[in-house]
Image (cartoon, rainbow, N blue to C red; front, side, top):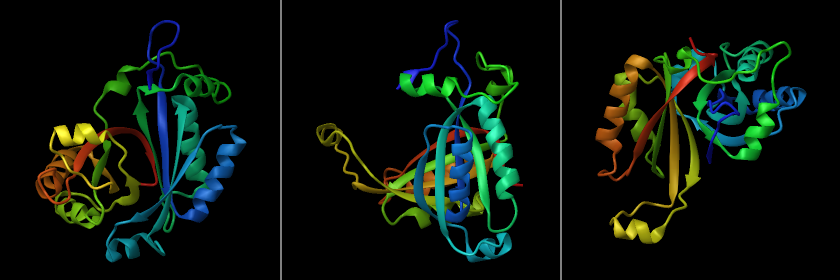
Length: 235
């Protein structure tokens, strides 16, 4: 990864856009990205963790979800959020949510390609504004735990403000010698739990997860948070 700087030495405003929705809607979103000539998207298969009561309330017909992820300049990301909300009716029952996360690094080739993506009439962002640095209303809490412990993460977080989450599976790739040196033994098969939380709920949720599913527990969890600077489909 490289720090993204322009000719003036400033960090340009790039965003990581994530859409979590039903497979059918994600397929439609892929077409929207193609129409916008976005060169790179990544697709993940995931599962929702909301309780049946919440699923019924939202009108969701099943727990299966897809995650579509792409890196975009901030103005283009804002335009894509609007298009996704309009075309996919995000926020309505049986749809999904889309949000953007601030980025500070990326490979040089990707940065170059993304830098050419701008909506018509938009002025190119030359750096982070004061608004970018302000406290965000929502945060993405990411928890990485051993396989089979995602429900424990949700059990810990629901009483302190989490309404639901999204889980996808991963495999740890790391330096085995370093792991032995630090006397850390972590399962290779891991689960990643994504929870969107309001600012006031972020710390209580992270603390609750850490207490129940931290590194000293069987879950061997790692918890981190990232600011969300734009979101559609979530009241």
